[in-house]
Length: 370
Image 1: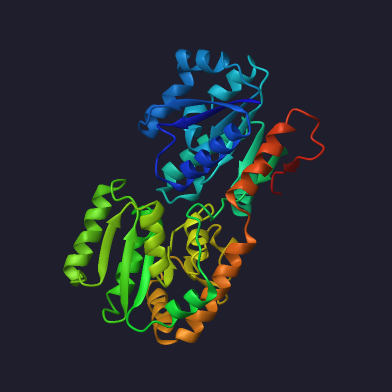
Image 2: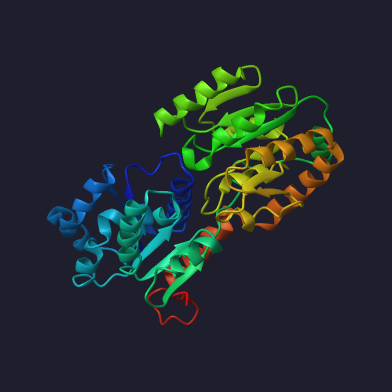
């Protein structure tokens, strides 16, 4: 197949969505398919809207020699009108890969309405979908006017190639001293690292917290996190590592005991699954797709949004009850083993794309929620 892929910026950017896109591109190319990247420049949301009226962009997409065009849904403001024009001029289908809808994020009411209008228009302009979770699929179904073929292909958790034995998981969980907590994610407001800082402030002698993730996406917010550390005098128990990957990240996860990512919303939550690959119970929120990975009280916990007090109580309980921590750690590792690998998920997408132009005998359509 000859495939086009529209993204903003470079494919090597550090986020779960771009990791997903990279895994798919690499898998398809290894399988002998041609993948042409169409990179649009990063700009403000409002300037992206102007792309819909760009003749050079329209001509570029119209001239693509591809069998189908993939679009990362992040690019929806640049394409919500352009797609309709494009489909009158080309024969290839347009498939959207959806990692996180803008409509699920918190915005002032007028902006929220506007963003939802633009995103709804975009979603109804494409021919099919690749979803990262069942929750993402349900969110999209509420915005569609008709049925479209789709597939849910969850991310893998095996990127770091975790290798841990049960004896190692048991020994780590029962290790004495402060509970070692890791936050894995970019330090942005939606992922709520401030909530973990607030919980840690009330348990100084009971926890040590490592933050692993980009710190340049919301600079003002990160400055606020640093002020929290200074004002609460948490320097001794908090460490900001910045972005970690590969062996450095694996080493941190291997030495941690619990993963906390109490996001306001996660389209899937690759961090939960990657942590579970090292036997780490995960604490997330009941919003979004975290519940598709975390079984409350079995392999981790789901808390309410903004519940720093509840988070503190759970961490204190795990610190004091190492048998409970051991049981949750074993269950977390068992959960990881049940999820498909990156290769298995990308193979499902390849199959979906390969049969896309055939009659939709095997493609399960997504229908508008009633």
